[in-house]
Image (cartoon, rainbow, N blue to C red):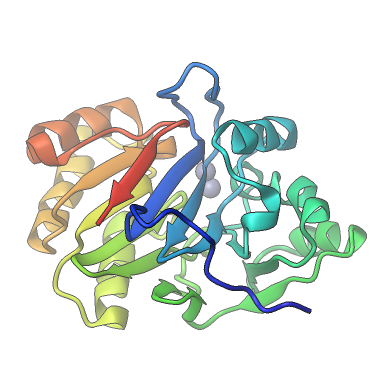
Amino acid sequence: MLAWGVLALPAAEPELEIRVIYDNTSVREDVPADWGFSSAVTFRGRRALFDSGTKPELFLANLERMGIEPSSIETAMISHQHPDHRNGLYELYPLNTRMSVHFLEAFYEKAFDEAAAIGMKVQREARPYELIPGAYSTGMIVGDPPEQSLAIETSRGIVLIVGCSHPGIVTIVEKVQQQRGADSVRLLLGGFHMFRQNERQIQTQIRRLRELQVKRVMPAHCTGDLAKALFAEAYGSNFEPLGAGKVLRLD
Ligand SMILES: [Zn+2]
Ligand SMILES: [Zn+2]
């Protein structure tokens, strides 16, 4: 088997690029919104998939519209067992069987049974691990259900991608800072799971995230409209909502 190499990208490529493939909202007309989350992460020329959306057909169509070749995806991690993060992968995998796939060992059996049915080899993770060079999974963080998040160590600090934040967004940030020996987070993005929370609950967490030196936020997916509005108020120009079709470039 050929070893994965650095993608041949133009010299002007940023250190980190994140393309949002699937989200509850959309910023591009031809990349439709649907409940779920997925993003493609290219860091220093290596590409990983973080989550894979709900409807496989829409996921694959959005992937194509976002210019991501299935064969360019070296590895995939699924944040947690819920179908709105996991489903698309089962249709993507047959298009690129060289891709390594990382679940948590705590996922329900159904996730592994569906993988076995299509011959998809899955790594059952529990401890933190390096997904691609410089980008680390937290490993299992206890929650209902348990979840893993992705901490990317850019030259200007940690960019943290979360799926649904079932363990709690504050818990995840604290865990990442412990694991990576960091005292801030450059950018936090993904689903913060606050759509059923009231203003007081949300404000408590926003205050704590600011204490933890989370400098910039891009809430998506299950964050909810109230929480997005409160983050916008607290973070000002360091807030930006994410949506399917978004391309983020960070140096
Ligand atoms: Zn979700
Ligand atoms: Zn979920």
